[in-house]
Length: 185
Image (cartoon, rainbow, N blue to C red; front, side, top):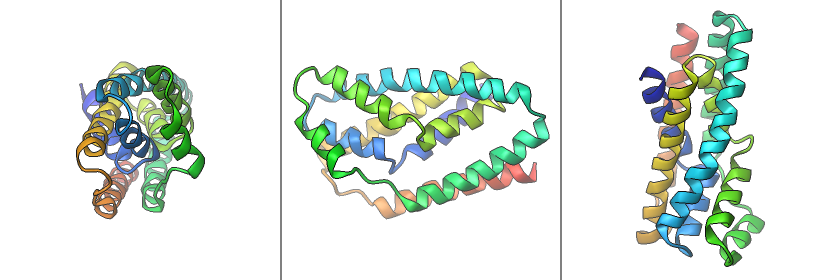
């Protein structure tokens, strides 16, 4: 349960203001919310399953103290990454705006590709080195889907009126706290 709750909280925070959350808002203006959320869920289940398997292998191969230091430094790096911010490129915006055939496949593939190497994938790998793989997988998936569900609601009802600056600072602060706690531990 600790793996579940920790992963859910960390990945929810990591996803705030992330590029894939911007994609969720964009897709939500064009497709049904349930279709977008289903595509996000399918992509996230797969990406995070790969992440926890990789994290578990690394976690079993390295000493626990070294993993804590690496994880702490990684979370401090995620804090800086979050402060830098994410934006959709013009190409990504046009792809999200012009997809019309099968919305579920388009959303799933777009999210799968956007998550490869993203901070939420790397955070999931990091969490899996220290926690049980199943709880990390389910918690990280639900955390991401919940954050993107918020983006879908915002995209549907509020347009682009997000206090992005405060979301970015809050997420960066949370990563920094997790990083410092890991380093102290």
